[in-house]
Image (cartoon, rainbow, N blue to C red; front, side):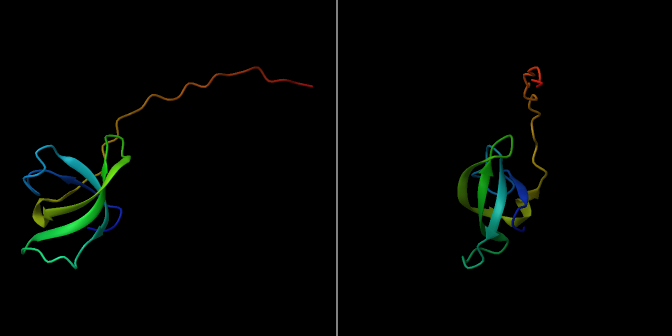
Length: 88
């Protein structure tokens, strides 16, 4: 994992993720000692459109982390109101 990666965390990463979440990685925290195959990292939890909603430090099983493109729900285009151009 590297800074900027978007990952999906499910129960494969830890039992705490019964409801899967998307996280944008800030950095791994190698100074924290863990069990073999586990890691601590810092990241932003993302909502459905990719906006950061919370900063978190997470402890996960490395093998359960899935690199993912962020699913973006299409939003409707903003309707522009056109006004006649003034001349002269």
